[in-house]
Image 1: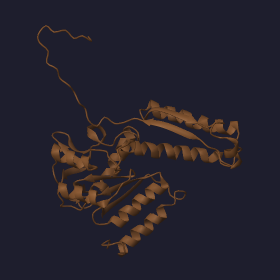
Image 2: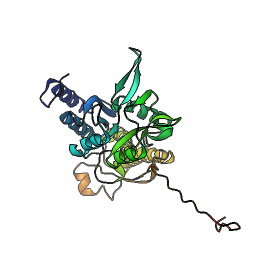
Image 3: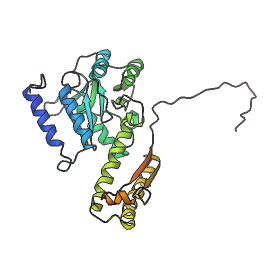
Image 4: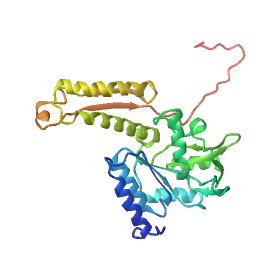
Length: 295
Protein backbone atom coordinates (compact mmCIF):
# COMPACT_ATOMS: atom_id res chain seq x y z
CA UNK A 1 0.00 0.00 0.00
CA UNK A 2 1.42 3.36 -1.06
CA UNK A 3 1.88 5.64 1.96
CA UNK A 4 4.65 7.78 0.50
CA UNK A 5 3.01 11.07 1.52
CA UNK A 6 -0.17 12.37 3.08
CA UNK A 7 -2.06 12.31 -0.23
CA UNK A 8 -0.99 8.79 -1.25
CA UNK A 9 -3.82 6.20 -1.51
CA UNK A 10 -2.51 4.22 1.45
CA UNK A 11 -2.26 7.28 3.68
CA UNK A 12 -5.77 8.37 2.71
CA UNK A 13 -7.08 4.89 3.55
CA UNK A 14 -5.36 4.92 6.95
CA UNK A 15 -6.77 8.37 7.78
CA UNK A 16 -10.25 7.23 6.76
CA UNK A 17 -9.99 4.13 8.96
CA UNK A 18 -8.77 6.17 11.92
CA UNK A 19 -11.65 8.60 11.47
CA UNK A 20 -14.04 5.64 11.73
CA UNK A 21 -12.33 4.45 14.91
CA UNK A 22 -12.65 7.89 16.47
CA UNK A 23 -16.25 7.03 17.35
CA UNK A 24 -15.84 5.83 20.93
CA UNK A 25 -19.53 4.98 21.24
CA UNK A 26 -19.31 2.53 18.35
CA UNK A 27 -15.84 1.04 18.84
CA UNK A 28 -14.45 -0.13 22.18
CA UNK A 29 -10.66 -0.42 22.09
CA UNK A 30 -7.61 0.38 24.20
CA UNK A 31 -4.70 0.34 21.73
CA UNK A 32 -3.80 1.54 18.24
CA UNK A 33 -0.88 -0.01 16.35
CA UNK A 34 0.15 0.56 12.73
CA UNK A 35 3.00 -1.88 11.91
CA UNK A 36 5.16 -0.63 9.06
CA UNK A 37 3.95 2.95 9.50
CA UNK A 38 6.79 4.92 11.07
CA UNK A 39 7.23 8.29 12.72
CA UNK A 40 10.10 9.11 10.33
CA UNK A 41 8.27 8.30 7.09
CA UNK A 42 4.53 8.57 7.76
CA UNK A 43 4.03 11.49 10.14
CA UNK A 44 0.50 12.31 8.94
CA UNK A 45 -0.79 8.83 9.83
CA UNK A 46 1.02 8.68 13.17
CA UNK A 47 -0.21 12.15 14.15
CA UNK A 48 -3.76 11.17 13.20
CA UNK A 49 -3.55 8.03 15.34
CA UNK A 50 -2.37 10.11 18.30
CA UNK A 51 -5.14 12.63 17.70
CA UNK A 52 -7.74 9.84 17.77
CA UNK A 53 -6.30 8.41 21.01
CA UNK A 54 -6.22 11.82 22.70
CA UNK A 55 -9.75 12.74 21.59
CA UNK A 56 -11.16 9.40 22.71
CA UNK A 57 -9.12 9.44 25.93
CA UNK A 58 -9.42 5.68 26.33
CA UNK A 59 -6.72 4.14 24.13
CA UNK A 60 -2.98 4.20 23.62
CA UNK A 61 -0.77 4.33 20.52
CA UNK A 62 2.32 2.18 19.94
CA UNK A 63 4.28 3.84 17.12
CA UNK A 64 7.36 2.57 15.31
CA UNK A 65 10.06 5.25 15.05
CA UNK A 66 11.91 4.07 11.91
CA UNK A 67 12.12 1.32 9.32
CA UNK A 68 14.71 -1.44 9.58
CA UNK A 69 18.37 -0.54 9.12
CA UNK A 70 18.63 2.66 11.15
CA UNK A 71 21.25 3.39 13.81
CA UNK A 72 20.67 4.46 17.42
CA UNK A 73 21.35 8.09 16.54
CA UNK A 74 19.02 7.96 13.54
CA UNK A 75 16.20 6.49 15.60
CA UNK A 76 16.69 9.23 18.21
CA UNK A 77 16.72 11.93 15.51
CA UNK A 78 13.48 10.61 14.03
CA UNK A 79 11.69 11.08 17.35
CA UNK A 80 13.30 14.40 18.29
CA UNK A 81 12.59 15.84 14.82
CA UNK A 82 8.96 14.68 14.87
CA UNK A 83 7.85 17.27 17.41
CA UNK A 84 5.47 14.74 18.99
CA UNK A 85 4.52 15.70 22.54
CA UNK A 86 1.86 13.35 23.88
CA UNK A 87 1.45 10.89 26.73
CA UNK A 88 -0.94 8.79 24.62
CA UNK A 89 1.89 7.33 22.53
CA UNK A 90 5.10 5.37 23.07
CA UNK A 91 7.84 4.10 20.78
CA UNK A 92 10.12 1.07 20.95
CA UNK A 93 13.29 0.12 19.06
CA UNK A 94 14.98 -1.82 17.42
CA UNK A 95 13.24 -4.30 15.10
CA UNK A 96 13.00 -7.96 16.13
CA UNK A 97 13.10 -11.29 14.33
CA UNK A 98 10.24 -13.72 14.93
CA UNK A 99 9.17 -17.00 13.41
CA UNK A 100 6.54 -16.74 10.67
CA UNK A 101 4.54 -19.86 11.48
CA UNK A 102 2.71 -19.81 8.14
CA UNK A 103 5.95 -19.96 6.16
CA UNK A 104 7.98 -21.64 8.91
CA UNK A 105 10.86 -19.19 8.58
CA UNK A 106 12.15 -16.21 10.57
CA UNK A 107 11.17 -12.70 9.51
CA UNK A 108 12.06 -9.21 10.69
CA UNK A 109 9.15 -7.18 12.08
CA UNK A 110 8.81 -3.69 13.60
CA UNK A 111 8.39 -3.41 17.39
CA UNK A 112 4.66 -2.67 17.15
CA UNK A 113 4.09 -6.26 16.01
CA UNK A 114 5.25 -7.74 19.33
CA UNK A 115 4.54 -4.97 21.86
CA UNK A 116 0.76 -5.62 22.12
CA UNK A 117 1.46 -9.17 23.24
CA UNK A 118 3.87 -7.92 25.90
CA UNK A 119 1.26 -5.47 27.19
CA UNK A 120 -1.45 -8.15 27.12
CA UNK A 121 0.79 -10.47 29.14
CA UNK A 122 1.51 -7.66 31.62
CA UNK A 123 -2.22 -7.15 32.14
CA UNK A 124 -2.89 -10.88 32.52
CA UNK A 125 -0.31 -11.44 35.27
CA UNK A 126 -0.61 -7.99 36.89
CA UNK A 127 -2.72 -4.92 36.00
CA UNK A 128 -2.71 -2.04 33.54
CA UNK A 129 -0.96 0.20 36.06
CA UNK A 130 2.13 -2.03 36.19
CA UNK A 131 4.99 -1.27 33.79
CA UNK A 132 5.01 -3.63 30.76
CA UNK A 133 8.80 -3.83 30.93
CA UNK A 134 11.65 -5.58 32.68
CA UNK A 135 12.46 -9.22 33.27
CA UNK A 136 9.21 -10.07 35.05
CA UNK A 137 6.61 -8.77 32.58
CA UNK A 138 8.54 -7.37 29.61
CA UNK A 139 9.75 -10.52 27.90
CA UNK A 140 9.31 -10.77 24.13
CA UNK A 141 8.91 -14.53 24.09
CA UNK A 142 8.44 -14.90 20.32
CA UNK A 143 11.61 -12.94 19.44
CA UNK A 144 14.54 -15.05 18.27
CA UNK A 145 16.86 -12.11 17.56
CA UNK A 146 16.99 -8.32 17.50
CA UNK A 147 18.32 -5.99 14.84
CA UNK A 148 20.96 -4.45 17.07
CA UNK A 149 22.18 -5.66 20.45
CA UNK A 150 22.16 -2.60 22.68
CA UNK A 151 24.66 -1.96 25.44
CA UNK A 152 23.82 0.08 28.54
CA UNK A 153 25.01 3.34 26.96
CA UNK A 154 22.73 2.72 23.96
CA UNK A 155 19.78 1.98 26.22
CA UNK A 156 20.42 5.10 28.27
CA UNK A 157 20.67 7.30 25.17
CA UNK A 158 17.42 5.93 23.80
CA UNK A 159 15.60 6.31 27.12
CA UNK A 160 16.77 9.87 27.62
CA UNK A 161 15.18 10.57 24.25
CA UNK A 162 11.92 8.81 25.14
CA UNK A 163 12.52 5.63 23.12
CA UNK A 164 11.98 2.35 24.98
CA UNK A 165 14.74 -0.13 24.23
CA UNK A 166 14.22 -3.73 23.20
CA UNK A 167 17.24 -5.40 24.74
CA UNK A 168 18.85 -8.79 25.29
CA UNK A 169 20.43 -10.09 28.46
CA UNK A 170 22.43 -13.32 28.94
CA UNK A 171 20.15 -16.25 29.81
CA UNK A 172 17.12 -13.93 29.83
CA UNK A 173 16.30 -13.51 26.15
CA UNK A 174 14.73 -10.42 24.59
CA UNK A 175 12.80 -8.00 26.76
CA UNK A 176 11.45 -4.46 26.88
CA UNK A 177 13.67 -2.11 28.87
CA UNK A 178 11.73 1.12 29.26
CA UNK A 179 8.24 2.54 29.64
CA UNK A 180 8.28 6.20 28.66
CA UNK A 181 5.61 7.99 26.68
CA UNK A 182 6.49 10.78 24.22
CA UNK A 183 5.39 13.54 26.58
CA UNK A 184 8.05 16.26 26.70
CA UNK A 185 7.33 17.71 30.15
CA UNK A 186 8.40 15.54 33.10
CA UNK A 187 5.36 14.40 35.08
CA UNK A 188 3.67 11.20 36.21
CA UNK A 189 2.07 10.92 32.76
CA UNK A 190 5.40 10.56 30.99
CA UNK A 191 5.26 6.89 32.00
CA UNK A 192 3.15 4.24 30.28
CA UNK A 193 1.89 2.60 33.46
CA UNK A 194 0.43 5.88 34.76
CA UNK A 195 -1.18 6.78 31.42
CA UNK A 196 -2.73 3.31 31.18
CA UNK A 197 -3.87 3.59 34.80
CA UNK A 198 -5.71 6.80 33.92
CA UNK A 199 -7.24 5.21 30.82
CA UNK A 200 -8.48 2.27 32.91
CA UNK A 201 -9.96 4.49 35.63
CA UNK A 202 -11.57 6.85 33.15
CA UNK A 203 -13.11 3.99 31.22
CA UNK A 204 -14.61 2.36 34.31
CA UNK A 205 -15.93 5.56 35.82
CA UNK A 206 -17.38 6.79 32.52
CA UNK A 207 -19.20 3.51 31.87
CA UNK A 208 -20.53 3.37 35.43
CA UNK A 209 -21.66 6.98 35.68
CA UNK A 210 -23.62 6.95 32.41
CA UNK A 211 -26.49 5.38 34.35
CA UNK A 212 -26.69 8.54 36.43
CA UNK A 213 -27.26 10.84 33.45
CA UNK A 214 -30.75 12.41 33.59
CA UNK A 215 -31.19 11.41 37.23
CA UNK A 216 -32.08 14.18 39.66
CA UNK A 217 -29.09 16.01 41.09
CA UNK A 218 -29.79 15.16 44.71
CA UNK A 219 -27.79 13.86 47.65
CA UNK A 220 -29.06 10.36 46.88
CA UNK A 221 -27.81 10.41 43.30
CA UNK A 222 -24.45 11.83 44.27
CA UNK A 223 -24.09 9.14 46.91
CA UNK A 224 -24.80 6.51 44.25
CA UNK A 225 -21.82 7.83 42.31
CA UNK A 226 -19.60 7.71 45.40
CA UNK A 227 -20.77 4.17 46.16
CA UNK A 228 -19.59 3.10 42.69
CA UNK A 229 -16.31 4.98 42.45
CA UNK A 230 -14.89 4.81 45.98
CA UNK A 231 -14.84 0.99 46.33
CA UNK A 232 -13.34 0.66 42.85
CA UNK A 233 -10.52 3.09 43.66
CA UNK A 234 -9.96 1.28 46.96
CA UNK A 235 -9.49 -1.92 44.98
CA UNK A 236 -7.01 -0.23 42.62
CA UNK A 237 -5.11 1.11 45.62
CA UNK A 238 -4.96 -2.32 47.26
CA UNK A 239 -3.57 -3.67 43.98
CA UNK A 240 -0.70 -1.13 44.00
CA UNK A 241 -2.16 1.24 41.42
CA UNK A 242 -2.57 4.25 43.72
CA UNK A 243 -0.83 5.64 46.78
CA UNK A 244 -3.90 7.66 47.76
CA UNK A 245 -7.09 9.15 46.35
CA UNK A 246 -9.99 11.41 47.23
CA UNK A 247 -13.42 11.74 45.62
CA UNK A 248 -15.61 14.81 46.16
CA UNK A 249 -19.18 15.05 44.92
CA UNK A 250 -21.35 16.90 47.39
CA UNK A 251 -22.87 20.32 48.02
CA UNK A 252 -19.40 21.94 48.08
CA UNK A 253 -18.94 21.45 44.34
CA UNK A 254 -22.60 21.01 43.41
CA UNK A 255 -23.63 24.52 44.36
CA UNK A 256 -27.06 25.91 43.44
CA UNK A 257 -25.72 27.64 40.32
CA UNK A 258 -24.12 24.37 39.12
CA UNK A 259 -27.35 22.44 39.73
CA UNK A 260 -29.36 25.13 37.92
CA UNK A 261 -27.14 24.54 34.86
CA UNK A 262 -28.17 20.84 34.94
CA UNK A 263 -24.66 19.71 35.86
CA UNK A 264 -23.63 17.16 38.46
CA UNK A 265 -20.02 17.93 39.27
CA UNK A 266 -17.42 15.61 40.80
CA UNK A 267 -13.69 15.84 41.53
CA UNK A 268 -11.30 12.91 41.76
CA UNK A 269 -7.80 13.44 43.17
CA UNK A 270 -5.25 10.69 42.56
CA UNK A 271 -1.70 9.88 43.61
CA UNK A 272 -0.63 7.20 41.09
CA UNK A 273 1.96 4.61 42.06
CA UNK A 274 5.31 5.00 40.30
CA UNK A 275 7.50 2.21 38.95
CA UNK A 276 11.02 1.77 40.33
CA UNK A 277 13.01 2.15 37.11
CA UNK A 278 16.37 2.71 38.78
CA UNK A 279 17.62 0.95 41.89
CA UNK A 280 20.47 2.70 43.71
CA UNK A 281 22.33 0.93 46.52
CA UNK A 282 25.04 2.33 48.78
CA UNK A 283 27.62 -0.17 50.04
CA UNK A 284 29.61 0.90 53.08
CA UNK A 285 32.78 -0.91 54.21
CA UNK A 286 33.15 -0.92 58.00
CA UNK A 287 36.23 -1.90 60.05
CA UNK A 288 36.32 -5.18 61.94
CA UNK A 289 34.48 -4.89 65.26
CA UNK A 290 32.29 -1.99 64.16
CA UNK A 291 28.69 -2.03 65.34
CA UNK A 292 25.56 -1.32 63.33
CA UNK A 293 23.89 1.57 65.11
CA UNK A 294 20.40 0.81 63.77
CA UNK A 295 20.59 -2.95 64.33
